[in-house]
Image (cartoon, rainbow, N blue to C red; front, side):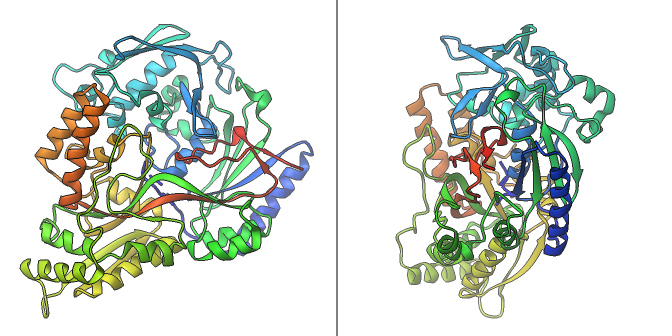
Length: 543
């Protein structure tokens, strides 16, 4: 998902520390008024643009939705796919359909039962083109989902391969066997919405006064740029094992300020760490509080391939050639990130060798020489500099990264200007097809499969192909891979598609992510995982 990620996939303006401290004291007073309340103070990358699970796309939103809603299956905090609303399921021998048995005690926070019809309504709403869900293509493995979402002639919502056999039995039919389907259902596209609330309030069903949850928590307060307060959902089927009563999320795009608030005891967990302070924080707090782990994500620069001169592969390759990824990983990110020469991160499932840029092993001087020759051939050089406008969402880590990249581009005569905005504005512009030259981006895997990274570059993926890359050969390989049921053959097909991206450079991969959190010793049950799934329900606080 879009990282805000850090992401996917929105940050608000930075607040003065004094204001944050005042807010903390006020909320602490609120918590003190209820002696039995256990209150967890969590930093989050930023405020959500929306909490409508069918319209969200970022990591900061995913953190909130894991607490507020529960799908058929979920990610445990150890990263494993475990039962959610569905207590059990079976897969047909041909791998093309699943039958889910829902829990008898699954309820909404207002006491309504969670039924199979809730999921039918929700899946249909997700793929309905009128919803405008940018993530709808995630569900294309479901029978007729793509036809419905693309408004193909004759496609009807009721033809979607999701059927309520009875109130507790849901059947999902697929276009073809999909090896990652269960993990796909952990994504927010698979979350149910409360049907009466949507029908009564329309888009306002997400407001705290209208919110009805089926997850471990319910939404009680959302103050933009300040905090989001969630309260334990007493109707939740596993409420007896939810140890934290209240969780308060604070938007913390300023990671340095978040680190100070953590050390002051105002935050008990952060969503990221300022890269230039990692060593200092480790020395001061120890590795038990400074937690760094592999993460299934890639940090990119999106190139607008539909815009001159960035439609020229020589220009794109030149810009990629001179980026010193090792320097950025070590010096800018304190060794907490890995240099990226390909689209797909390490540790991906259902795959083999990843495609990488052919210049990975070349010396910096040779790469610089080639880049200068490519720019010259494209018409740039002394007196005719390549001018690049580089957009990024405002964080300390991002600012330092793009400044370093601009300095490296300067060596080949590139003149770089910057536009930086809060994450909400930045990612909305990219998502909605706004104009740009090059833009910072991050993608965190929704499921551990190469398709979840490669699909970003399909020409018909208007929600995420912000650079408007269009390669018919690549598209044909992705379609072929989607239809291949043999895992090894499918991997080989996707590897061909991956190699095209490595050669075409539609986006520039810069780094592979790690997850980075500051975690108080009071927090029990915290476990980092490749997906970065950290539901509050699996954690507790020591007194």
